[in-house]
Image (cartoon, rainbow, N blue to C red; front, top):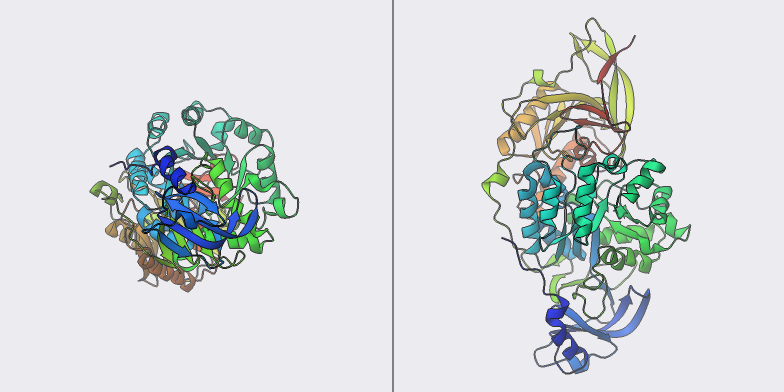
Length: 600
């Protein structure tokens, strides 16, 4: 079901030249606006944009010679004309939506280009899942470029996934029309240590002339980082401080700084530009992970640009970071990222560059949104039964599956506990002394229990550990089949019986997120596609996600967008501690460590 890509510049060159020279009529002319030129970082008043065949023919002070009897004229009325916004690194699955519904959600916010890594579905359905995402992406009226996932599993030997991605898979995907490069290379120790499989994937991408995405989640900027950069990754979004951004840019990488639903890494890194004065061409804005509630209620890349401006960035520089910088990085500066001849006619009309109200959105020459309303439907892929039947528990789970035995004779133990950090992906490696009752270790205070339930092969296996930072109170549990990146089922709770309830409920509905408190179901978000996505409209999914967030607060959690922290607790490539289906992982050393230890 592979779709035909948007027509290339050579296919439309005759039409573009005819309109630009006044020998032909434009399909559309945007008249009398302020041209925001991201190539020269200028605002030029009193300009028109002539569009034909979905591309820009010319940007001139007077395009009246291009106006024919059938030309649509859009009056800019002195508003700013800026390029459609680009998200340089993101995961559609994190929106809980399919590509079609994600596109419909972000189009009104001015996002017209996305660089997506579907490694979530790759872990569940393998190359078939990537192809499904790729094919639906190409059906959309905006530009969704797909990066072939690189790491499933993210850390070999540390977790078990539904499928594994191979170098042969990567080489095949590089021939698909919508594949723009290799998704984030999360196995940074593998690259630094010259792992043959990782290097084969990078080589297949480079032979195809495409971009290798990075993911260096270690704070070590010494030889390991140097080896990683030498291995080929061209960008990185895992920085959390100014030094991270500077190190990446100095080594020739693009520093991607993110503002997602829970990752707030822009303010701490953009000072490399605003205070240190480094060249902003090598910095890119992105979201990484945004759930549906953020998309519907707060925005998408427009939110990131506004935030960068609020952090002291010049509005024109912030726009470059969300347009031309991204396009150039992926080799698409002749296609997207600026309002210049030959480029796809992706245009936003806005009355203010700082607050950035998205008033009109034009994608490929077609008006697709006005004042926050999407004006068209986005085509859906026919997702097969295979993609909708992915939660295989193997048995009905019981409270006994969620207990942690203590060493014989112990009245208390020392527990290694995952510490959640608000608004950041990394965790802390904590230790708590926990009591023992009837041979079972008890979670007390701010320490809750966490479990990873195997859901790909119906083994019935449950791995248990402890987590701190959510602030849950009273008998409760929260379960999710979104568990980056292996996407087993994460269950966090204060009571084993509630944890079993939540896990079994997701087995019944085929995946999603559910919260129980005091024996009652408070919220349910059904995600039937791969246990990751809904194909329902974004507003409906966002409403359920809002109820989920309310339910988390009702259980005592006050963290900002704590669901994102919940869903990442199984990502065994981000320090410090994570849980996998194989045990508790110390990501600093990539070793399994015991959940509990004797106090003596």
